[in-house]
Image (cartoon, rainbow, N blue to C red; front, top):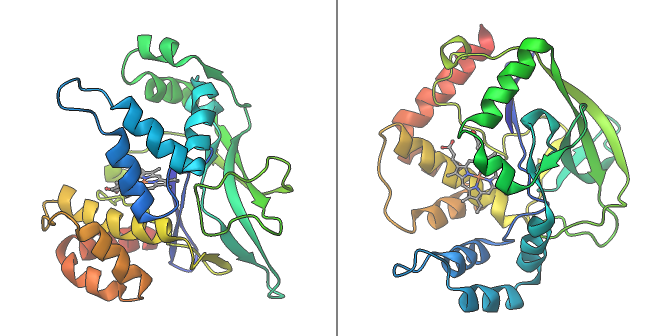
Length: 271
Ligand code: HEM
């Protein structure tokens, strides 16, 4: 679930969650390693299981995520699915006291699932159609919950699963009332950036995956809007720009599409 908030002061913040309990990788190297290990073999069209198992044996966090997924049900409805941001953010109050937390969108209708085989029997757009039907009957709401880190929990590694007993508080509520078209929204590019945070919220400087994501999403926008096509390996360079604080360099690279995106977002925020 990717959500974009147009704030009263004209700035924008994005909150993005998925259904995994944690990410498969804690670093760009692990991300590429996992992708290589699970890639289908050309001859069979299936992953090479011994290769994948050997990778998982060396990467316990990835193995725990794969294991957790095996028992996780597929969604019954998007309105009954829990979405997790996976990254830790530092939340500070006006007295400058701060705590690290991961955020979750929890459905007010309660979490419910179904075996993946059942979902596979349904039409391709089933979850989206079901969601629209629900909206016609009334609002769909999610609470925004923070799960606080305890001493020793990893703050820079989204592949590390935190224990379920971590303190949680609800800090917000999102009510979805009707479908909206891209034209109505006025932002046809619609990119969500997990580093686009608002005052009082910071990303972890140790989180290499969140830095990689920013660069990857910018490149994706450039590609899907007909912008420049990037050679293999440029994602790593893009994350390097972000990590070294030279984000202007990547903005220069993507200028036509990114500027269009920023203008579209700002226009829509102003209207
Ligand atoms: C190495 C790590 C990752 C890479 C390289 C990656 C890459 C991408 C790319 C290229 C897109 C398309 C962006 C666009 O064109 O707008 C995307 C979308 C998305 N990613 Fe990731 N991603 C990563 C990790 C994650 C993680 C950890 C999450 C967990 C919250 C996540 C959640 C999403 C979501 C929800 C979208 C759809 C956003 C939208 O609809 O605008 N990704 N990702």
